[in-house]
Amino acid sequence: MTTRWLAPEEQRAWRAYLAATLLVEDALDRHLQQEAGMPHLYYSILSRLSEEPERRLRMTDLAERLKITRSRLTYAVTRLEKDGLVLREGCPSDRRGSMAALTDAGMTVVERTAPGHVENVRATLFDHLAPEQVRQLEEIFTGVARALQSGAEAPGAPEDVPWRRRSPKPSCS
Amino acid sequence: MTTRWLAPEEQRAWRAYLAATLLVEDALDRHLQQEAGMPHLYYSILSRLSEEPERRLRMTDLAERLKITRSRLTYAVTRLEKDGLVLREGCPSDRRGSMAALTDAGMTVVERTAPGHVENVRATLFDHLAPEQVRQLEEIFTGVARALQSGAEAPGAPEDVPWRRRSPKPSCS
DNA sequence: TAGGTTTGTTTCAAAGTTGAACCAAGATCC
DNA sequence: GGATCTTGGTTCAACTTTGAAACAAACCTA
Image (cartoon, rainbow over all chains, first blue to last red):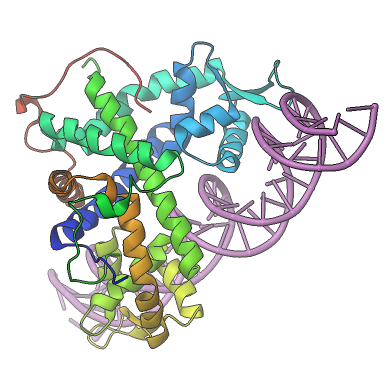
């Protein structure tokens, strides 16, 4: 099958996507490193835990929600535990399991950091979006995320999708 | 100033954005690791070089286009050089500078890898987007990228933007 | 042209990520 | 009950990223 290179508008979208997502993650990481002394992912862990009714979650559940590997989470939680922001507890119902629980110190960090972080998320992303674009963004990425989670990576029979392009132009980063 | 938490639709968009971008990068990295034995960024370096008229670019220019730090690029190019895919050359006009040049072996890798990569970019992202959404994606991220490059992080006087929200609901990862 | 600053790049150590291997503890099947 | 398979988590070594510090060449500026 001859390669279906990206159409010019797809190429432009792809390049913009790559550039913007890198810049956004960078901005977030820099800011949270400043404010809370940890990378964005680590703050996300605390933030997610803080939303749970009991402020605790099983490792696997947490990893699943954050879309990261268990191994990556293990490493991160180990550090957060050293910092006293999170505590590991055995899971009562399943003795294999292990829970990550937000400590009071961890909660304090979240409370102290959240306002500045939201502000930064706005300054980095939302301030550059019209309300309509916020909706579009949600729609687009909700679909993409859903599609990529379940394992399958393409919808229906690819051949049936009518709006596919078969254009020239190589390369795409 | 009381914190302007994210409105529910912003929150949803943000969560979807975080999940999707992580999943996409993961898919790309996994695929290129398989096919070319290198992470996505490294392939991007080769791909960018392959587009240049002389197949070479100054380190700083390359870093700028890829939106990565010079230090990160140095490390990556060092490895690619070890693999024989890239060659460093002094810059004639500026003796401080250094050029990264794609070798023939590097070009071969790009040519061999590109088709599968494009296919993967489609399977990962574009296959889940309607043509209209491709346009929206480009528009959104072109704007965000432009805004974040230049240093300034918010447009005009923030107070003047009429579509800002001042809603309840804390947290945002 | 001798300072002093800026710019282009690399270096280094600390921190984070990856993926495969490992070690239980459940769950199944006979 | 005891093989066997699966699941939840951790470990380890190899690799990558980060950010500050170090260098060296280029660019002022008096």
